[in-house]
Amino acid sequence: MKSAISGNLSPRYESAAICIIIDKCSFLDPRFKANYVADTDLVKSNVLTEMLKQHDQHRGESDDADDHRLTINPQQDSQESLEPPLPKKAKGLTAILNKLPRSNVSNQGTVPLRARAEKEMDNYLAQPCIETDSNPLLWWKNNCVYFPLLAVMAKKYLCIPATSVPSERVFNKGGIIVNAFRSRLKPQHVNSLVFLSKNME
Image 1 (cartoon, rainbow, N blue to C red):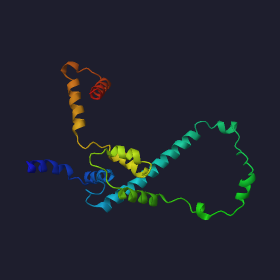
Image 2 (image 1 turned 120 degrees about the vertical axis):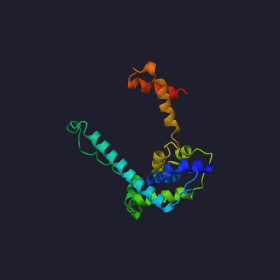
Image 3 (image 1 turned 135 degrees about the horizontal axis):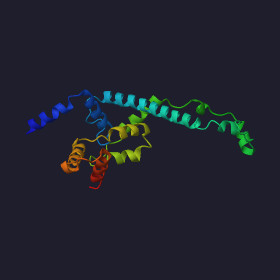
Image 4 (image 1 turned 135 degrees about the vertical axis):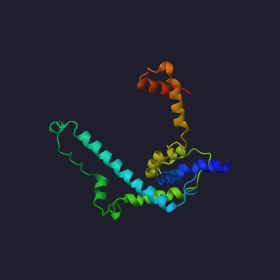
């Protein structure tokens, strides 16, 4: 029995790409983290690289959306004044404090993205694993504020179905709906019927 199960499962995990995805899913699952990962450093490097790439892509999309919003109605520029409002003159205690020398802490700049991502990953791994019967998606929902970069990765990988059973059930349901007596159903009607059938269960 064991050899039959092993023979059935082994071909499913021969692909290196699939093994990398499985390692990332396990790493991003707060129940397991790096406990079941063969090469922790490799997985950390892959996750870190993808975090940085995804952050850059998201920032690029946001910039494109901002540019699009700015160019929707260019006639507004001619109608509205481009002069910035005059700054308010400081009074009282504010005027006195503004003349005092300030610390250079605010001039140190922001923390680089890579350093922030590495720190976030170290803090994530330092947290104890949650119980195995806990919901990892609920954990990420409650902790996405503390791990914003990793939370985006968790949403991407932890939504992958662990088995092909749900998709196979959808195909079976489609085969039941589209039979010899209903062969003239249009594709959009078939999609709607399958959707309603699976979501009413």
